[in-house]
Length: 358
Ligand SMILES: Nc1ncnc2c1ncn2[C@@H]1O[C@H](COP(=O)(O)OP(=O)(O)OP(=O)(O)O)[C@@H](O)[C@H]1O
Ligand SMILES: [Mg+2]
Image (cartoon, rainbow, N blue to C red; front, side, top):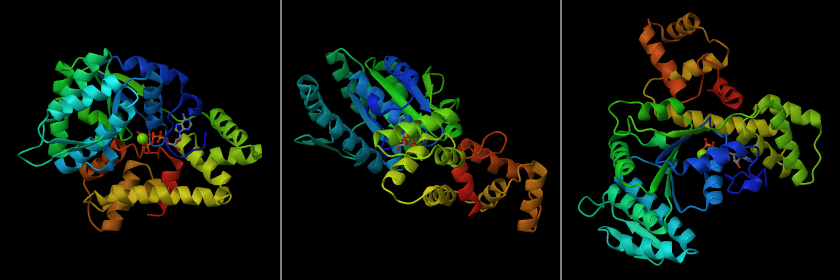
């Protein structure tokens, strides 16, 4: 189903990404691949579909689920390894090797197909030991095992460093692993990879980018989705949808999904999308110390994009002088998180609407 709101996992449900799909499948033979693109442009769908199509064994870890302590990281990894075990239950050789090798590692417990990994200081295994197990499985199966870290830019702080080190080590020594790192906050993601002090620095990687659909592609996507559900929607409505939501496939699918559930008309659905985007902006703002972000976002959404005008408004609101550096820092961070582009325009019209309500 094209309008299914979950990430797609099969080629038949994946709209339009044929070329990117075959490129990514080829890149699974390289040690490191980066999949980047704006939010909701189909990164996770592309990666999961490529993994299914390639038939390779894989570990999928979604760092958006929380990443700030060993406890969180190891819980996530245990869940991902258990999922790998479940998938591998169709491939006896892989499953047997996985269980045998894991059982030798300190801190790993196995209950049926469920794996738990200790995060205690004394017992926790090294990440490189876990990657080593996957590498050995790949070696024995004669194919690369793919290890995906979705939304990799969340790997920050000291735990992030531990993970980056382990990947760098594995890149050099584990010849049967391929790491796939995805990210929607592109400045932050590439900031990690291009930081000369980061352990990953200097290691070559292949790249695939997701993008917005063109106007025409967006209309075709919507038409296909409604045809599939045997529902007729006027072309005029579809054009208005694309006007409001741009070619961001995640929003288009969201609209299609709610429209089929007859959860309202275009206006209500856009309202819902804006509310969702607003709560995401709020959670971004909650991680910022400075209150300036809120004001700058609002000003940008109102169309104030020019440096001097932004500065003037900011100073007026705060009732004091604001340094160029402070304003630069805020804009830079918004760019880094792909909220605005180099021209200080919002990358997503729905987020722009949400910013007006901050
Ligand atoms: N090529 C595609 N064909 C059909 N639907 C798609 C496609 N790509 C994405 N979608 C739909 O768009 C939504 C967002 O997709 P997905 O989660 O894969 O994007 P993403 O880039 O990983 O998003 P995020 O940045 O939020 O992680 C989902 O509802 C998914 O089903
Ligand atoms: Mg995703």
